[in-house]
Image (cartoon, rainbow, N blue to C red; front, side):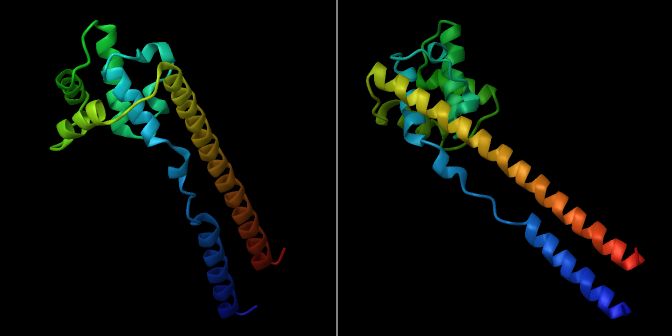
Length: 167
């Protein structure tokens, strides 16, 4: 095998490796229900639902803003304070969540987001939990797929090195 053949083989292997490792990740946006998340936050801010009673941590939310609102309302409830828009904004600011349009967005969540009956809210909470579980499973599958691809690429690299070494 000539020097140019070895370079060509190395380039081909690198291109194959790049193709294996750089495949676009699937869009997990379909694994969320932003309306359900907003409905839960709206119901909690209205006092019609107590976040701690639904056993739904903020980490289950897809939207960072809605997760922070949910956690803020839960914290205010634990302190025995009414989750007004102003109090939620103070809690969001304390957690480092700031922005010029934040007040308008929290107002929209509180007043403009219709929500279902308490039974419907429980169903929405269950849906958010299930979608979060699916996102975690998808992430695990993506990591596993990458590990397998890395293993295949490393195995192929080992075989190429053995060929180059004449083994």
